Amino acid sequence: MEEMMEFLKDNPVFYLATVEGYLPRVRPLGFAMWYGGHLCLAIGKHKAAYKQLLDNTNLEICTANDRGEWLRVQGTANFDNTEAARAAAFQQMPQLADLYNEETGNKLGIVYLDHISAKLFSMSGAVKNLIAY
Image (tube, rainbow, N blue to C red; front, side, top):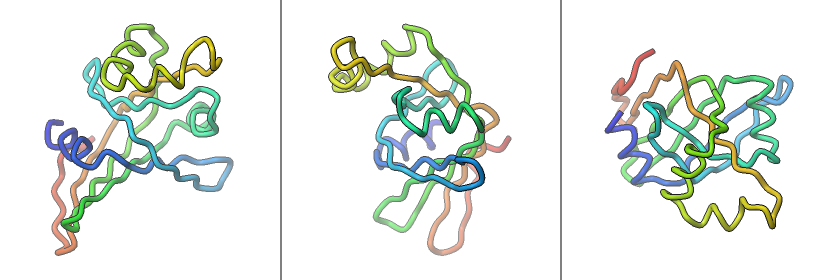
């Protein structure tokens, strides 16, 4: 878990892959935290990605560094709608509060991953299993 979170911290833009119907959808995200024993992502509840995860909970995230290594994490989405989870996200990234508040009307959704597998790949072909489900 620690190596996965360190890689995400060092490479803060990662890509979330979801499914819409039968089509893949990918978009960049920039928030991940370890909370409640899970890897958590923050996604606006008004966004298509959040709705896609409600329909199909399978997801994958991927990020890379400038040394030719990349991290792939697969899992299933669960939803933590507690105020405590949102508060933890706002504490870790205070600028989220500017986007998700009563004035904007946007609500922040916290998605935590279950059944995760995480692998670290390199251009040399090496694969390191960080977490195996």
